[in-house]
Amino acid sequence: MRVGFTNGVFDGLHAGHRFFLQKASEQCSWLIVAINTDESVRALKGQGRPIIPLESRLRNLYVTGLANAIVPFHGDPVPLITALRPDVLIRGEDQSDEGAQYVQAVVRLPRLEGFSTTAIIHASN
Image (cartoon, rainbow, N blue to C red; front, side):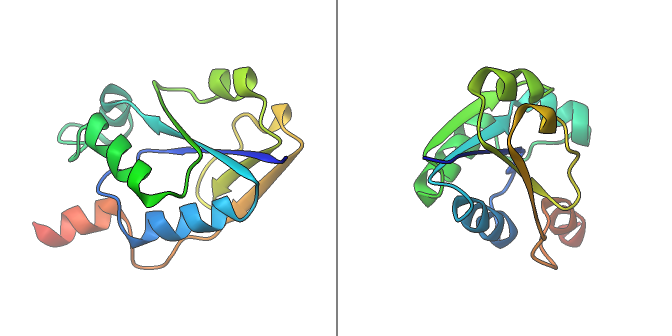
């Protein structure tokens, strides 16, 4: 069994998120997705974010069926990576390699062009 790990905000789950999660699930036999708490989203993205509260983001991610385990985390994902010890760290092309030293491999996935929660927010204003 190859265990994969990825993390993100997943605020306003959209086609870009689904594309990423589908590709991530193809990289492993068991995918763990860590999702930022509301407080850590505000620290990363600023006031007014997240637009969807944590409980709803967890449910939205769950119903996709693309993750085998979903866990909230606050701030730095490295303690979670070291505790879970996945085989592969799955990152978007714009994410850091935090925690790479604790896994066997890092897989970089491209973004689906034209989709981002920030862009959607700006387009609606």
